[in-house]
Amino acid sequence: MGFIRSVLAWMSVPVLCILALPFFIVRPFNPDNNRLLAIALARTGRAILGMERPVEGAGNMPQDRPVVAICNHQYNDDLFVVGDLVAPRTVTVGKSSLVWVPFFGWAFWLGGNVILNRARSRKAVAVMQATSEAITRENKSLWVFVEGTRSKGRGLQKFKKGAFYAAVTAGAPIVMVCTAEYRNKTLGRLGKREPVSIRILPPVETIGLTTEDVPALIARCHKEMAEVIAELGQG
Image (tube, one colour):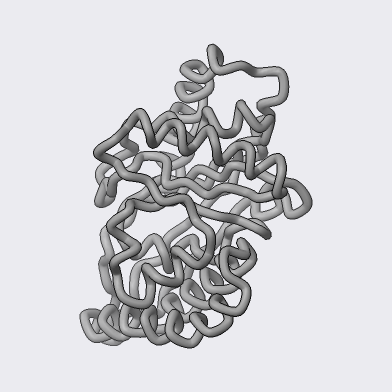
């Protein structure tokens, strides 16, 4: 039953993207498109999976100013777990290969998200720095799965630097979204997905910091997120 739930949840993704595409085409690259679609995908997916997702600190996600939200990345199912937590006018970062995924990739591109070529890391950092200008000039927020690759529930990996350069350059606060480790287990005969807890930490202000402060900022955020994720796992 759990497998059927998973298939149905992922079948809902192209269906919702198809429904959203005409709206996206009318107002292309509007960052609010992302939030509406992410809410629809996450809540529909969780309903199908039968997943509970308690959130602590939801009020720590600012709704009235640009932020750089960083989140740990475990599975593709993170879309259902955290998709509806994004702030208004949020764009995210994805690999260039995503654009070629039918329906979802097209919606991702039309949402004005940041497309990175991971094979060209220097250019990737430049793109993230350019994104900081959009944060300031266009009042956008940025959501980043800060590890870059999926951990599959095996601990917090090394952080990529781009999100931190973008935050410092723009003077935008960093908001850490910590997701408990999970492994897509199902519960009971109905195959409902295991609950996944989340804690959103208070914003870390970056005003007054320079790029020289980025390594220390990364170390601080990694330490705090690792500690919180461990606590969530004990709960």
